[in-house]
Amino acid sequence: MLDMRADLPGHELVSEGLEDLAAGRESESALLVAMAAPRLRALGVDVPAGGGEQPSHRLYELLAETDEGPHSRYNALVARVVSFARAAEHASSG
Image (cartoon, rainbow, N blue to C red; front, side, top):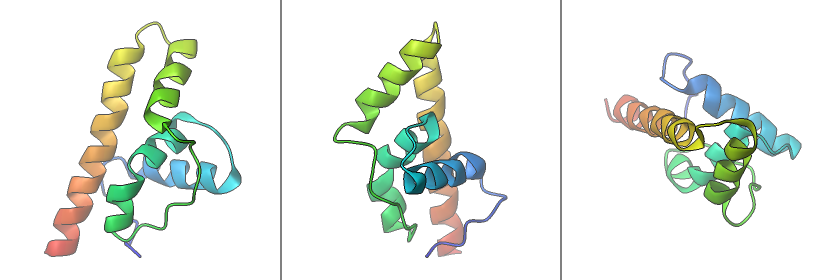
């Protein structure tokens, strides 16, 4: 499994999402991690099942319920998990 280094950008979001998925909680971070599950698993992260069939759609719906600008928030969250994955890939290759 990937060493979940705290210095990687977005680490707190991914860690929280993993915990929420494992506990069966639907949260922004859980849905985000569920969206990124294939890439995270390829990095060696043990991603619990969950998030439904279309976690990206549910994340957007959840953001729309609590935020007046869900599109910007959605894009920012996706950018953070992508940043985490890129940094993890770089750390594991070097």
